[in-house]
Image (tube, rainbow over all chains, first blue to last red):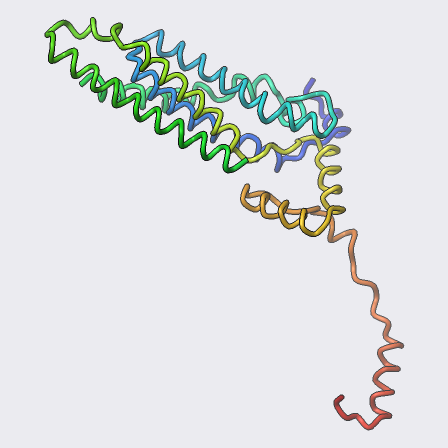
Length: 118
Length: 142
């Protein structure tokens, strides 16, 4: 798994890791607030709202995988897909910092819920 | 890429704004026409507003994902090979590539190019001969 020897044989470019993480976190922050707007319009409350957020996060991850990761890794000719761009694809791409962005989601969720149902 | 994502984002924002306004008007209408309890109006959001909201969200997400700067390979071997390939493209392609990278806020070109390309040693004998010829001709500036 995470082995110093493995890293010495196949080194990682820190600059690219940082760039990828920043790109993903930008996308996540933007889409989380947008899902908050959606949940506010639909008038979701408590658990359905959070389920909506989790579903939206999954949809965005799939979009990133289908539109950005899969075509670009195919053009370079390698088969390992998300491993090409992420050190731990499961954590970085699919789970990510969804808990941190949930705050932005709740913010716009409550705002638009209050605006629409004044 | 840029035009497609921008048009998708614009379309999504317009439809999302319309959905917000429609939902607001709908809740205003139902609360003024019938003084029912507020729990009733949550389920009574029309189907078209729901569909519009979900579709505009999907369009916006697609636009945001397409418009994001491209990811870079993290494995050193893959990354280095892509950087090496960039050194052997035509000037036009190279200019476009550099522009795209600068906009994304990344480093441009091979960071080790300075090790590969170095000026040769100065040929001091040739320089001295040139100077001697110049002096022999009278030292006048050409």
